Length: 110
Image (cartoon, rainbow, N blue to C red; front, side, top):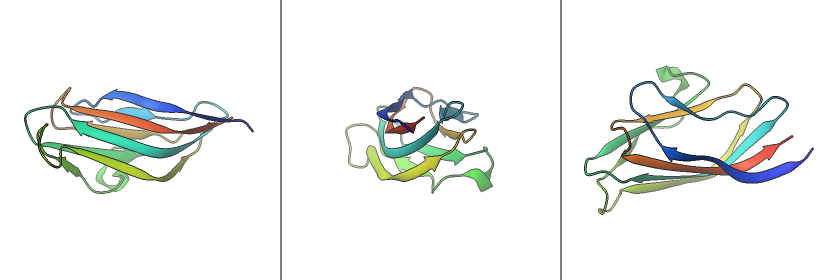
């Protein structure tokens, strides 16, 4: 098995249906180690993460509330270990399109 430490996702979160953040490819596993979330907008934003679905039961952790850019609480960082097997899907959304940026790093194992 080969480890590839890399950026797994970098971009802006959308609104409405939760978009795919990361899913391991065929024959691969992923380990998410760090997520950096930043509100670049002028309004308070709510960010929600989901694992293997988009229902309330699939919600990963609590809703994250980010203050407007330039104020305390406008960013957050998650450090941990979240293992994803082939077919697992991490999704997320926010309350305003293009207002929240997300950087996810980790290890992809093949």
